[in-house]
Amino acid sequence: MSVTNPYDNPYDWERLMRAADAAPSLLNTRPWQFECVAEDRIDLRPEWSRHLTVIDRRHRELVISCGAALFNVRLAIRVAGHDPVVWLLPDEQPGEGGPPCPHCGSRCGIGELLASVELVIHRTHSATRTEQRLYEQIQKRRTVREPFTGKVPLNVLAELEQAARREGALARLLYPRESRKLVREAAAVGKAVSADTSYLAEQGMWTGEVSGDLGIPADRFGPKPADPAHSPVRDFGARWQGDRSEKEFEKHPQFIALQTLTDTPQDWLRVGQALQRLLLTATYFGVQTSFLTQTLEIADRDLHQRIRRPWPWPPVTQMLIRVGASDSAGQAG
Image 1 (spheres, rainbow, N blue to C red):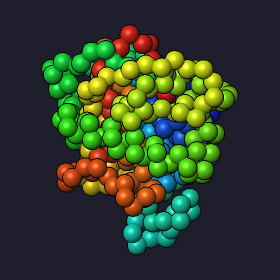
Image 2: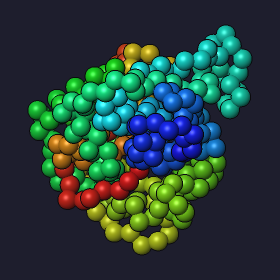
Image 3: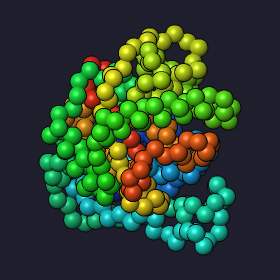
């Protein structure tokens, strides 16, 4: 959500907001709000009216989405020649001993101010080649919900993992057996929520017949998986009554997991920035991406005790990204 900038400044507010709105978000809700509070300061706040209260009960993916938008704004500031100084969660947060969050009733630690960005606008210097090339990918990045026809080379996978680590997240390619387990767990989650009317109602509000630039319209669902029990994509059109083609998806998908050592709102903001750096790096190298996060959401909601977060490793998995090559141009969101 863009807020009017009341200040005359050299960094072009509309350009910054175009960059922010190109970031990925759950169901393309774009749950962020940027406000120019001084000539040299921008605040990032959650847009609570776009929070998915059933699917994203802990606000985790909302905050990750805001982190991705924050990374795009950082890049846009640097390309203008200025340096951003970022404070994550600068206000004192409720924490475990504080009052309950007014939005979820729990002590989640999320306040009304997610980040504050100060701009050093009185001294300019050119962006690096890496910053410039990543910025040029912002409007090109797409989510691809099509079958992938090729694998990502190991040297490029190493570049993607390194990109995420530069923003403070752990990143690693899943082993084939882990990828197979992930796909099975995602299918189990799909079956579990198929009878959850509140979950389906919320998802339906943001998919199918949507208006404006928010949500995922039916023409961006992608094809129907020929084998839903072994599909590496999230099928938002499983209950859609319109016509869709059916395709076989890759049998051995590649996934990168983004992880953190702890599970706090600051971690989520860092993961969002790491996610976006990884996605823009992938776009630069011609790698296409989509997400398979149902298992993480169901663990957040604890809808069914029998479905647990399927990862035995000490780090907390925050995002699961499918990578590959395809002939598709992809979809925004």
